[in-house]
Image 1 (cartoon, rainbow, N blue to C red):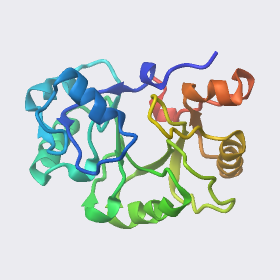
Image 2 (image 1 turned 30 degrees about the vertical axis):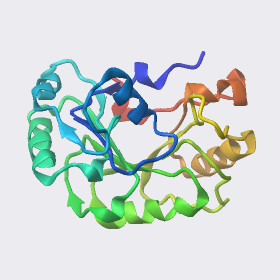
Image 3 (image 1 turned 120 degrees about the horizontal axis):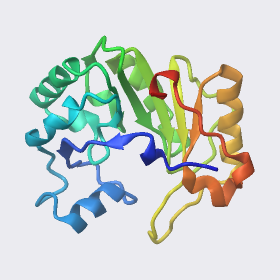
Image 4 (image 1 turned 135 degrees about the vertical axis):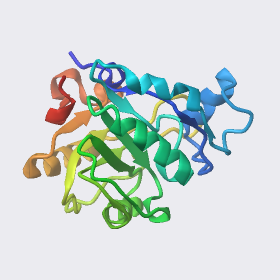
Length: 220
């Protein structure tokens, strides 16, 4: 039985806000619904939540559920990474859609930094990630997908891949196609990259075709 990724990787929304303005953004809708900030386009650092990272029980924390990593102010990054350094028992997952806007480096073995790719014309983000962010672990999330990906993607150095589909009820919503998902699975399987199909793909792929692999470091 497929599991929800949120049961395995917990959101810790230290920073809320993003100025990219994606039309399919669930984070912006959640921010408005729960009145988290006055203006989602202006990121806010909730420093009072840092203590969550002090939990002694190991967790996999998703750090950018309501933000984009490259939208964090440098001083916010520094403070958060200092808290991460004090809590090496956890794994920390970050995502960005614009890695070209940052030059960042960390040698933390528990920091996983990745990019979101929704269309084949965004595949340059993977190369941009490797160029502008130096870290131990890279990952890619193909969600939502608005086009099929090439059959020869450059996934060198990628340690984990997540595949999903658009959720919500947006007008013009685009569902991932089985062939698009299978193409990615074939490429990651050939390269030995663990791949996690999000639970929203069950109606599209069928339960018996679901693959939900995690990096070994995430299994606690």
